[in-house]
Length: 372
Image 1 (spheres, one colour):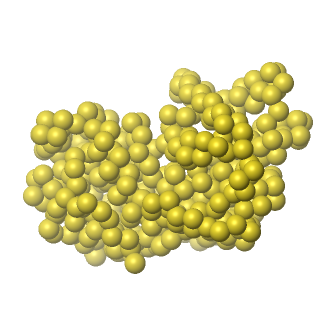
Image 2: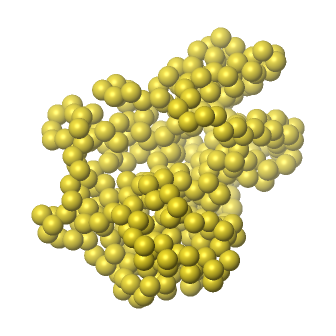
Image 3: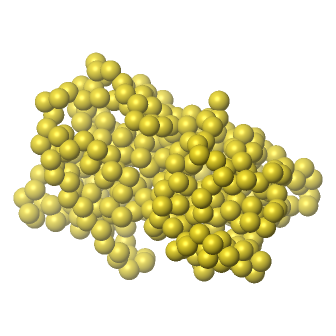
């Protein structure tokens, strides 16, 4: 439907689809609307009020450990009991679908890859519950699989780059270099990230195109990104003059070996190597005291150092790996998707919004330079 229409840019988000003007008065229900993905999808839909007449939002915080499949079944079952028949139901999972968190998987990750069953993965029963519900009710489905998600919300634990912004702000405050904890391979690796706003645009595009029904799509920024290119830019944003480099002598690094066999089915077990960790850095009293001074100076509201593991572990796991794998963008492109955002510009935009939320101090520059 939208493939015959011109593309459009919305700020840093480029090559977005346009839709026929006669698509109006649609209704959407977003569960988890205060989370990083739900909130940005909500913003995308609210940006098109003629197309989306009603957007209902639901947010609950069930006890930790409650069955994820059960949560989906309750939501879908509630619709069914109320005789509400959605035309399309969307489930967002993630890149762990491909098993890269266990060890080396076949890369790039393609949507047709077989499930990795060597360890439990709650994504799979969620998908099965969705498929069963849609087969029973006649609705169509979509599954979206982003990588490390970028976006600003008050609960930032799912955003690995928030911890990185906090680290940069503290290093700037202390007059220290912006050090890199990983290997040379991690420094140079082409990493894939997924801005939540672009995933929202992708979700809308897929839902409004019939040929995308009953399909899973990877969601990424669609560009290239390495820490070798990004680290100097991050330093500029926070006014840091000295940029560190990765430790070249890996014998000086700590190593964590993954316990399971690699999903690829052969080869060595995966390991993480790092010269220091963001979690350990966050536990240092000097780091926390510096952040308290920053909070007082800029009237900030959030103290991520109160939960170092909860806030900074995602940052470690996003930055340190050198063999995680990369999402393939091919399927969405073949089916007509062209959306793109430069990851550095996306991170910068998120940091600006974190500043408005009282979670990061102001940066030293007004805009980001794309990694081109």
